[in-house]
Length: 504
Image 1 (cartoon, rainbow, N blue to C red):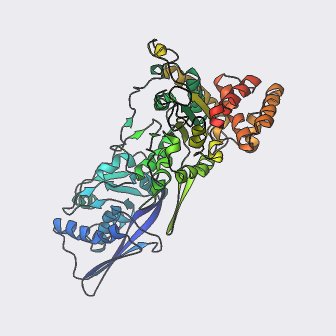
Image 2 (cartoon, helix red, strand yellow):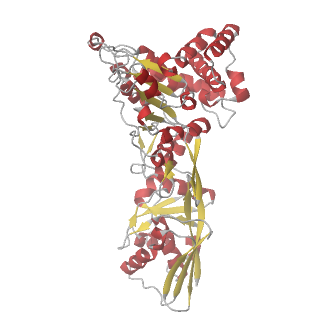
């Protein structure tokens, strides 16, 4: 007797199809699982045996062999429990084999036969849709999987529900997609007193996805400004929401199957390890830069991060993806994020205040910011000094535009960019443009080009810095509603690139 069920194995955000082949043959009673299973998969035989016993289904006194094909691909995770149980039940004619063969299954079994929610239901549903199969999973995981069109998602509370569904005794209704969550906006830009230049830089960064660095004294509002960035970013598009949710599904971060249209905002502590930031660990899980995909990665106290961690950001910033290389696997994750960094001007933080600065000023500033390498600093499009706010400014009423007003301008600029890059798949914002495309969309007028060439020659701009200024200038023009790139746009872009303290 033999039967086949289907499930998936995860390699990054991709779900690879796996055949679960079960053969029940004469011989000494045994239950073996082969096909490069990890410890969790190997232990599935005990969970399956106990779950079947809870259903009063006795295993035959024969040799049971489970093969996970392809056999040379590592299999990790407890979600193999349900497909192993279904293949075994089909092999002993408890459930019809043709019904099992038309379904992709994943789920962890408890000893009493209940189904425990697992990670990765969303990418598993996408794999099932590509194979023209349905998906059966724990009911708690069904809400997120139901967001994928083109496949029927069935959620069950227990293995008994699955058996009754396949035998036609009590068919289960398809799952409904989870709620689209939209947290209320509680942080407004008007809460920030003063700092108009920093607010303007924040708006430009949001409009074109330009990386931004704040440098200033402690308490000047750097973290406060960064925390208000999500409030001015446009909501995720349908494609972006699906991309982001797939990563969060693998990390187990989707709340009750709800897919959020709010862009992620990740703020790791400066003690985070390289694996936590870039990805890795057991199973090569996504790191903070991937969890911030299509959103914001805020790194406060930027120079305090280990040097090795900071240097690993250089390639993902340029390519928008990261390759987590391990001895037995090479996993690729997308990581197209907006990096916002905040740093004090020096170790003591009071470089600009002679009364409070340490005795090593200004050398302490060079040593402290020198922890950030030149190539990494060169990848920041906008560098802004955030001066201390006077007490008289704190007593003034709220001023400046609200987050809603700024968000409307940012959304208008993003719509312009969406239309501009409609014919290209790899470009969504001005920060993504490069090569000939950048030259076509960011060609300054004669006065602007002359200013840019003089600045490049005087300040020794790198080729990367030159192109990043063009991208920022293009975004400034979009915010102004100007189709042409003129000298004022280039001048403002240059002013954010040549901040004195950042250059030091």
